[in-house]
Image (cartoon, rainbow, N blue to C red; front, top):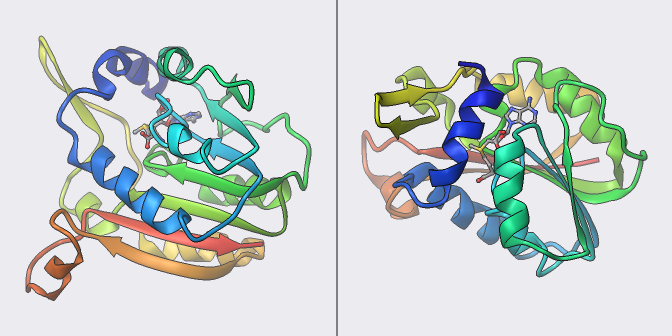
Length: 212
Ligand SMILES: C[S@@+](CC[C@H](N)C(=O)[O-])C[C@H]1O[C@@H](n2cnc3c(N)ncnc32)[C@H](O)[C@@H]1O
């Protein structure tokens, strides 16, 4: 099943099924972005609007791009705010948006579905204002090496999604070659960052803040 179709069928239960990755991403997003101010935001792979609901408390305008009709529908049911614009759009194609408009671009749990990171980073760079920030939070590459991937349960068993493994160097090379500066990099553990001190504990997520 293609990625778009899989998210269409996951949408109904995406917010309610057990999902440690989703929950930890929410924490990572809030904890990281709390200290930044932003007015104009572009959210890539916004899904059911889990993070949009947080971003709208701080932003004046948000554009959300996602190619899953059903995920977008769920988000629209939850967030009826004129400050938010949901646009059905494939991130692999050209984003039909003005350049230099965003103070912040966010992308959570989406890049594992994007094969060509270079193209996405280049587009993100263009859409950001000077000094704008690009926040990314993804399944940690170590988790990917060990076989973890986006999946959900259906009546017919587990449905795994099509994913691409991105090494740490892939993110950094794409970003730095595009012209971004790295401001923050952080690993997120299931039981808080005290786990970092424990041998053999594997971080679930990795997050970055880049600056144009
Ligand atoms: C795991 S969900 C994450 C949703 C949200 N960011 C969150 O953290 O809850 C991944 C989202 O990326 C979207 N997505 C994946 N590949 C995409 C693409 N090529 N273009 C647009 N959206 C895409 C999916 O439709 C889905 O809504």
